[in-house]
Image (cartoon, rainbow, N blue to C red; front, side, top):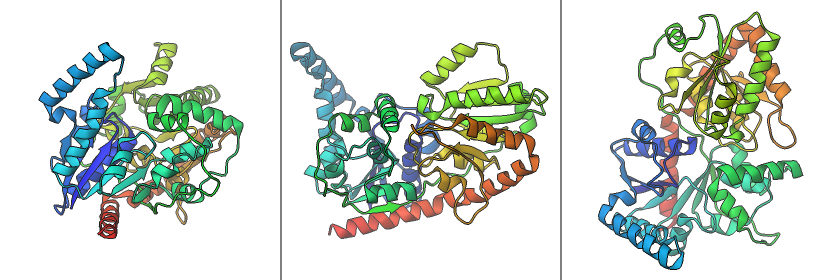
Amino acid sequence: MRILYTTLNLQKAGSHIVALTLASGIANTKRHEVFYFNHGEQMVDAGMVAAYLSPQVRLLDMNSFPRLNKVLWKMNGLLKRLTGYAGFHETCKTLVFFYVLIRHRIDVVHGHEILVKHSRLTKVARFLSVPVVITDHNGYTMLLKVGDISFYPYANKAKAIVAVSEYTARVLQEGSTHEDSALLRAYGEKVLASDHKAEYESLKARREVTATERLTTPVTTIYNGVVRYQKPLPEAAQLKQQLGIPAGALVFGMIARGTEQKGWRFALAAYQELKRRHPERQFAWLCMGEGPCIDEIRAELGDQYPDIIFVGNVDDPHYYMSACAVGLVPSSFSEGLPLSIVEFFEHRVPVIASDLCGIPEVIAPAGAEPGGFLIEMEEDSTPRLSSLLAHMEQYVQDAALLRRHGEAAFAIRRRFDMDQFVASHEQLYTKVVASGQ
């Protein structure tokens, strides 16, 4: 089978890592020919691609056609000067994408972007016979949370939708998150405008749909697969010494894009209050990621707090996670299934995370000892600071609980191994292709 994966860009994001690792996992079975098309050739995190994409996958974008791309950019510039129209290159990119699908006789396109009115994959589903599969990393859930169901006609053009959690599947099938709060909708629209381009474009272009309109595309739940770390790691004590962290310090770790939605300011406030309450203890907060919110915090803190360590954008988070005692994921509004939780679990590091979307299915799966704590949420879907602080304090005061949750986290991690992840997608592709014959 010839399978093509695609994302809007290849900047660092959990959904992009999932797409890259899935493409690699499918390619490494040696049973399929695998391609990957990046729609944002100017937005690439080279370190992420090198870390997660197998050489067996053929990576394509507009730079794969250098002469054509150069001519198209020149024509785009000329048209912009003469007419003000700046979308010529993007229009031609759609035609190039169609060419790639036809030229390589692709059997299935698997997009890790949602199908909305103006998305390129919607055009594929409309004009070509190649079936489209979509993984919803909670893009549709975000739209439902702010009351937008105008995506239904476009989502229904997919042959299958993969939900990354049972929560996501249930919301898609029921057509509602069963949340009705003006505060939540206002905060959600702010998040969409700042962090989620495709979803925000859908929100701006939404139209009225009939009350009977529903999602008819089949929805399948497949939990994200996470590749196990294979490289040797330094001893935690050695890494702490390198980072200037006292040997006896309790280290909180956090990795995410540096946006407000990821909860950096909530984590900072809770951490500072924890230090105030426990002056007898030593702590450190290890921050992995880049973005405007992190930049603002760094500027505000200056050099006053050597215990708050910013390591920037990292291609190897496991290296730093091995020095952590507790992971923090205090996200707001919406999350898919955060890879960072599973990565922390691999190091027997329990996680304190927002009680949000599919996160409870990772932190406290049914029938298992929890691998951490869930943070209570406010009405606007931001984490309750008092709850986050209380859970951090529980680990400070109860070392046995910290160890027990760490062992439980390590056991839960097995649920997200790659074998089942790859096999489930192979089964889905076979079913989708067979249904179109």
